[in-house]
Image 1 (cartoon, chains in turn orange, brown):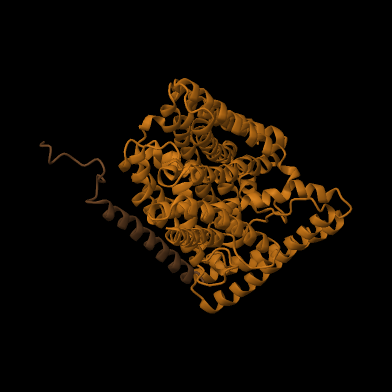
Image 2 (image 1 turned 135 degrees about the vertical axis):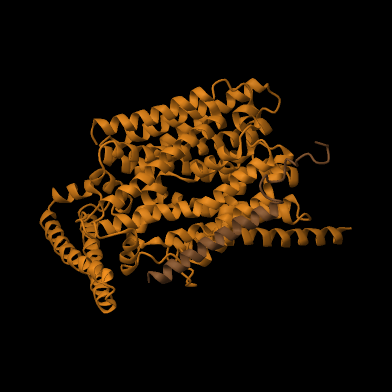
Amino acid sequence: MNYIDWIVLASTLIFIVVYGVWKTRGSRNIEGYLLSDNNMKWGTIGLSIMATQASAITFLSTPGQAYTDGMGFIQFYFGMPIAVVLICATLVPIYHKLKVFTAYEYLEARFDLKTRLLTSALFMISRGLAAGITIYAPAIILSTIIDLPLNVTILIIGVLVIIYTVSGGTKAVSQTHKQQMAVILVGMVIAFAMLLYLMPEQVTMGKVFTLAGHLGKMDVVDFSFDPSNRYTIWSGIFAGVVLHASYFGADQSQVQRYLGGTSVTESRIGLLLNGLVKVPMQFFILLVGVMVFVFYQFVLPPVFFNEQQVENIKSSTYAEAFNTLDQRHEAVFLEKKEKMEQLVVAIDNRQSQEIEGLGHQVRLLEHETRKIHQQVVDLIATNDPQAETKDTDYIFIGFVTKYLPHGLIGLLIAVIFSAAMSSTSSELNALASTSIVDFYKRIIKPEASDQHYLLASKLFTALWGLLAILFALFSSLLDNLIQAVNILGSLFYGVILGIFVLAFAFKYVRGNAVFLAAIIGEGIIILLWFLSDRGMISLSYLWLNLIGCVLVVGMGIVLQALQNSSAIKKK
Amino acid sequence: MTVNSAPNPDKPPLFKSWKTLYLVVLVCHALFILIFCWITFLFK
C-alpha cells in the first residue's frame, strides 16, 4: 500500500463515520434511536439487511473458498429466499401490529416473561460473542496486509463503529449501511473487471468457466445425501430454510433492520429484495474467487498465501525444506501453465480428444500442486504448532494488493473495513436494544423517562462495543473458542426458531412447555455438536439448525399434551 | 378518489397481492437453482 491507497482508505472510512453522525444527529427519544422513528423505506431496509449479513469474512473467505473448493458454497443460501417469504408472510405483520422494539417482546405477549427472557438471553450470548469475532477475524488479516499491529487494526474498526452507532442508533446504522454497500458493490465490480482485464488475451469469460470446470471448480450443485458433506442442495434448502428463517425472523440484528419500516409493505419489500438478490450476489463473489483461481493458472501464485507465515518459515531451520517445496511448486506450475495454454488452443479448435486428454493432465498437475501446498502446511505446523495454517482468507486480498493499481487497493481494503463495520454496527445496535427493552426497561427500571432510556441505550451500545473490542483483543489467546464461535449461530438458531414456530403455528402450546422444550432442546444440540466436534458422530453443523427446530417444536407439543392430561386427571 | 378506491397500504405497489409477489420471488429463485444445475452439468 502506498500513500494513494491510504488516502482512499482513510477518506472512505472517515466519510462514512462523519456522514453517519451528521445525518442522524439529534435523536430525542427511544423510538427514534432504536426504531429510526419508523421512517425507513424499502430500499434502505433492503440495503441495511444486505449489509448486516455481508461481514468482512464474506469478502475475504468466500473468494478463497471458491479458489480451493469451487462454487459449492452457494448452496448454503438456497433456503434463504424461501425463509424470507415465510417471514414476510408470518412474523413481519405480527411485529408491526404489536409495535415491538425487539422480536422477543412478541414471545411475552404469546407465552410469558421467562420464555421472552430465555430467547433474548440466547440471542445475546450468540451475538455478543460473535460481535468480537466479527471484528477480530478480518482484523487479523487486514493487519498483515496493511502492516499495522493487530491491536491497532481492532481498535480502528471497533472505535469507528462505536462512534456512529452510539451517536445515531438504528438510523445511523441504516444510513451508513447504504454508503458501505455502495463501497462494497463498486469495489467488487471493479475487482471483477480488473480480473477480466488481467487474464491472458485468449482467456475470455466463457473460457474461464470451461477451464475452471476442467479443474472441478464449477460443481455448483451437489445432489449427494451424505450428512457429513457440508454443502449439498438438500442441506442448503432444508437446513438452510431453518437457519435463515431464524436469522431473518428471530435474530434481533436483522429484525431491527425492518422494524424501522414505515409500514408492513416497506418492511416486506425490503426483505424480499434481499431474498431475490442475495443468491446472485453470492454467486458473483464466488465467481470472483474462481476467476482468481484461473488467473493463477497463468501467473505463478505463492506456494502459501499468508506471507507472514512464509517469512517465518524462511527464517527458521526449515528454510531449506521450504525452498525445495517452493521450487517444486514452481516447476509443477510451469508444466501446468503449458498444458493450460494447449488446452485453451484445443478448446478454440474444438478438438474434443485433445481437450479430454489435456484436461486430465491438468487435473493431475493441480492435484500435485495441492499436495505440495499440504506439505508446506505441515512444515509450517511443525515449525510452529500455534501458527495459522489456513491461508484461504489471504488469497483474494493477496491478489488485490499484488496485481491491482494503487488507489484501487485502498478501495478494496475499504470494502473489507466497510463490511466489518456494517455487520458489527448492526450487532451492537441489536444487543443494546435487547439489553434495554428486554431486560433493563422490563425488569430493572420499568418506570423512567424517555431521556433516561435514550441515555441508557447509548451507554449499552458503547458497553457492547467495548466488550466486542476487548473480546477481539484477547481472541488470539482463545483459539478453540473462536472455532466454536464460528458455528455458534447454528447452536442457537434452530432452538430460537423452534420457539417462534410454536408461538405462531401451535396456538394451544403454552409458556411452561415451550420453556422446558427450549432448555432440553438446547442441551441436546450442544451435546450433538460436542459429539460431532470430537468425531464421535458425523454431522455437518448446518443440520443442527433443523434438528434444534424440530426438537423444540416436537417436545413443546408433547410436553403441552402431558401437561394437559395431568391437569385433566387432577380435575 | 373515493374512500373505496383508496390504495391499501399493505398491498404491494406493483403486484395484485402479496401471494403473487412471493410467487415471483420463489420462481426467480427456482430459476437461479436451475441455472446452477445447468452450469454444473455443462462444465463437468
